[in-house]
Figure 1 (cartoon, helix red, strand yellow):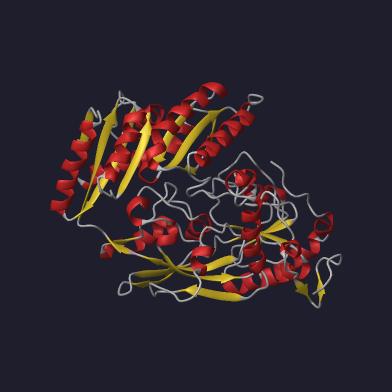
Figure 2 (figure 1 turned 45 degrees about the horizontal axis):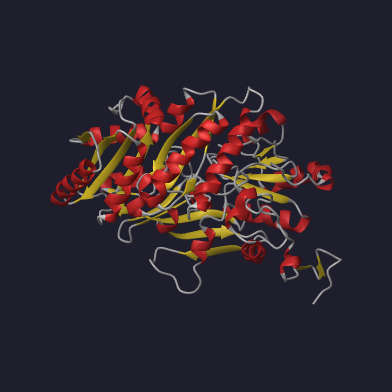
Length: 499
């Protein structure tokens, strides 16, 4: 992986930058809000994709939108790069620091600001965890639908940056389907509001553009999300199969029958065993593949759909069934799936978590080809999927202390993502592109496609100061893309003539 070379001129100005940041965000009763010593910076050197590490030049911890605005305006005026960071749970290197950039941490934006049941909306700061939003409205029978496995730790701002999903996104949508509005600070310090508590907005869908933009367009400082009433009944089923191909066929058959479960997840035998040893969720250890299917809604409807799903599964060879009879049992079923990643972490020194999406009907074929790749690279893989929407999360197991194993794991992961595109899928479902998939963007997009996407970035960030080195394999200067940015009466690039 290649990142841009550090700007020696910026690094030489580090003391000046630190001094200015300290004036914008002064110390408080908890101490300094500008982190500079190498030992403390180590906590920010990577995100969840820990294979890549880099100490940031400096970390600043603002707690107001106005402070964020001043920081960005200062960085824009002086040409300093900025990388935003939430909880650091990203799995694509999206929050990987740069040696010549200010890391802007949003951990102090941690308050729920308003709960509006009449409009079924919550206004929150971006550092609030995903799960905390549901907990804030649980006593009134509401919840926030997207539920990534890291929801106990991941922040809502980071969810927007990566367009996170979760086990219930099949029926209730990803983050983009549940965010109503944002307050965002642009690189020049301007503070804009997009959307709000209303359900529809006029004009361009800027909210859809911002969601999933991975910190390349601005810094989000406030979020309005949609909350839903908890369903009357929710029951989960465990369905075991003697092959992953049969389980994959069942996924396609359930959706093909017009049934949209609240969630439908799949795990293969290595993942089943690792998870059961960790959580004791009651998973069948002799199954080659396991589906977790949740049906929700009115009780009569749920009972009917359970019977329909059982019939479909039996016709496709399912040999194990178990249906939750209590809320505690339902939560236990899901606790296993949501702890699959740490469970696999107990049986291997390291693992590389992939994220790609395919058409559901191609799942059996993709599983077979991943088995072939596992033999080719001589690396084990445990598979956990958001099976209902085709979002794959293969966990490639390796040992970073063995020379060459990390490189083989990366090549294995790259081949999986190329396969996703080959069968009509995409490079990411919810983890984002970051640095992990950046150099594979050409597998999915043409050069003209990428240039058009970069023109959008130029409209928000003309000098490319926000989260540089991420998403785009080659970042063109905005002037090269057909527009010239004029800054204080002159172009940033003197070799480009003015219009």
